Image: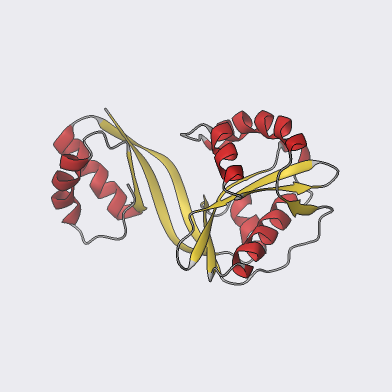
Length: 206
């Protein structure tokens, strides 16, 4: 469940209502203080425990900055790319501690036309774009295998995907990344993303 910023004390009131509708709630995300207060109150009311899965920052891009050029181009995946994408999926899942089936996620994003690969004599990086709202789009996955890193593929792939979104009517793009200083946050800053707010993603455990 995603939360916006709440006044102190509101989470306690919210827990009872949420529990009545979602007794098996598995996690909560939101600004640090709000997410932590909800997790504490949920465990006090429902039992179990909680753990922080991710400490992220929400980034926003309004205009694309051009990163250092990389060989290749962004395109939709083709049948020849799927052996590589299926081999990358568990590696990406391990790298980011993904709570979902990444192979299935890639497939679903491809069916929606929201999955892209950076092609430089074959796929070298994958980008998924989802979370369309009336005004924005969200970059929901970016992965470059170890053997293809430090060549500018990710920065150029994200920049190209954001250009597609902005050209398709979105006013901005957002994504979550590890808090600064981190390599992903530096990559995203190069293409025009700026930090908006720190967020915690918390697992609620039985």
